[in-house]
Length: 164
Image (cartoon, rainbow, N blue to C red; front, side, top):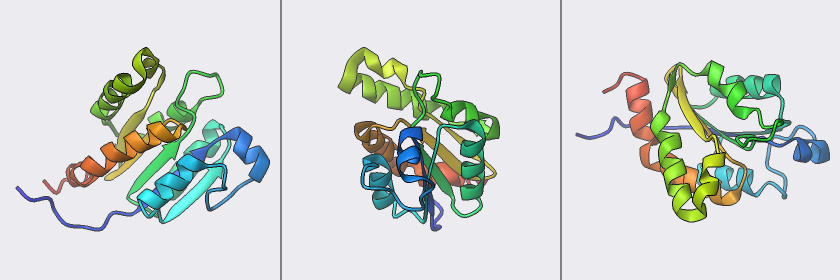
């Protein structure tokens, strides 16, 4: 069965208090944001924003971006540090979780980094027929997440929009 054809637009949110303190609010990735830059280029992202690790800032950025794009990808703030609040910020916005995304991400990460893979809380879900993916901040993790997103994003959106 063929996937339904439609354009997919992407947005990227980098969550990093240290970068935010260096650069302030930005609409394009600074030179020291390799992960954000990679995602913007890889997905030809229509929108980008750099924000601090703050629950309300993260929620606001994700919701604002969802008005503009079909898929929001966040990078940063998915670890266990008390300042890592991306998951806490995004999870309440989600209508349906995509549990398998985090499971497969951790499985593939385990093959690369071993037991340390259990430390990531990588997460994905659907909001109003659109997708949100929360990735760690490291470039290797972002590259893995991008590969997974690219392989299934059209299928995810087709189901989320009730087109299949």
